Length: 205
Image (tube, rainbow, N blue to C red; front, top):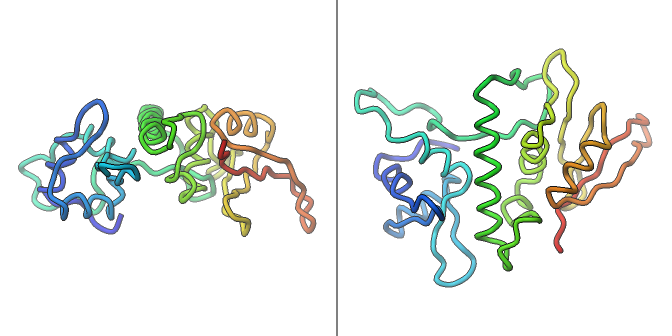
């Protein structure tokens, strides 16, 4: 996110319904939380606003300490899916809980935004954040992203609409995980490099 939420915006997030993540606030506050990626507006009337997975993580982090002299560049609790690559840090002990909570938040997002409340297929947020969504599905299932000196999955954008490429040492387990999470996968070989990879797209039905 470009900037951390204001104190008033944090209070709206912290006051969300603990079960559904439904928010109450002014139109300006809710619109700002949508821009920050902490909330989304439900497409069906009455068009209430709900927390995104990042919003749930921020709420669980609790209020900022009163003694803090200045806001951190990134608010505590904001989750970043790991797509794999040399720049990725090695996984830490707290990462398992972060991934689990983010996945649970995503399931709630599916329930609230899919027209039939289905949780077995991707929602609109995932279709607009393909790499992050596929990476979260893989990491939540226990697969490790590639980082410096280790092998693991890599998720990359492709020129094809609603499709990502997944690379790694074991494509079949990645395909099984993504298909269980509501994606459809096919295995392909790149013509130039002969590298095998998965092409994965979020399932619609």
